[in-house]
Length: 157
Length: 157
Image: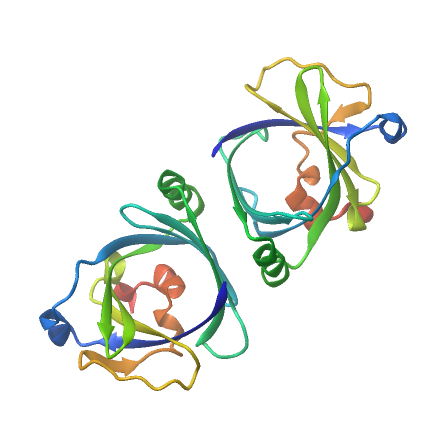
């Protein structure tokens, strides 16, 4: 576990299309708990499943306590079905840029049309270089959390 | 994971005191989710911690789908503190009787005075022998689930 410091940005679709990228990973995820202060999530990819717990620590949207546990894939699929009602679906791309890892999520399903990029930082004031396909910052906009997107998907905005 | 078939009984305090028993394990547990249909629980003993998910399958209180994952003890303690508000505390004794395992929970804290024994069965109609310290069956009495006991403890009955 650790405290996670992340910043989140929207992505320019046209510029993103031209980026040469590795193969992405398809994820389906659902929320077992999605309060404002804490979430319990099940995430399933083609080969793996993870239970993830996050709690907000302090007032900033940047910092959270996070715990993640890999579980058997078949159990992950059962939990997704039995414990969650709505979820999100996306392809995640890991992009290395200027010495940092950017996780870019291209949503599908009810959130199709949304592309969001996240960078994890060592401290809240760490400086970093922005790729040209990154546009406005949405770190503090609660609508863009995966928990919020599963309840109020992009298609309904 | 598996479907869990359990029956639950109250325990006669005087007879229980006279039973020769192995050392018990002290547990603290709390609920991250405790709906009527599903629970997510964190349980911490002296040396181990477990995340546990249960969902009711069908109408009977006997059968449930259950998933359990061991996690690091220090993370279990953090999750207990950050993700749960009220919980239960008990000492569990494993008693082997007539070829079956009985799990006897002697509650403390807000549920002090309550002793409950559970037996896990292979099928809902499996026959088994009852130890003399077992009294009335409470399998279908929702007040005796650990989730209910954490919300409405025995001291308030």
